[in-house]
Image (cartoon, rainbow, N blue to C red):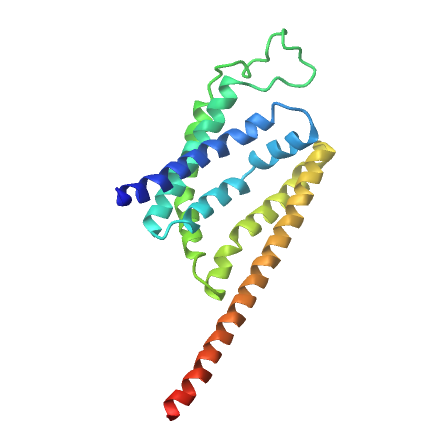
Length: 219
């Protein structure tokens, strides 16, 4: 019973989180207030999905399980994302709800091609991201480079989107990605500081044990 629960619970949590990941972006996009727009922008971008796969690897001791959960979870998230958008399309601003919905945005409009392309990409790239998350469990400097992956992805994506899309988007878009860049830098610095501090603490404990053992050896 305990063995079964230890296997089933992580899988159930992974899949439930994947469903939530796929829903947050399109659901938030249904509202026009700045907070919801910002949430929609973030969760319709790439780095939160990379973060999901990374965390799946961080929380599982098995590398194979980390890779499988990350791949399957990302694929489920992609399917959820596009199925929800098909079922509840977002009507552009200025179009009345009683007016005909623009072609391609009506409920039930197929996103099968996007699901196939992005679902396959999610499944393929989820495995290495899950593996990186598992390797990030390595304490000290050895795992630091892996732990910095998600802040790096977020910073690069934010910089690229600001460079390419900022002029054609509104102020919420620009603010969201500027905040993302700052947050990515803060997280990266915090991770490096935590690694350095942990390394010093381990050295201090080892030095203390060595000094404590020295008198006993002389006796």
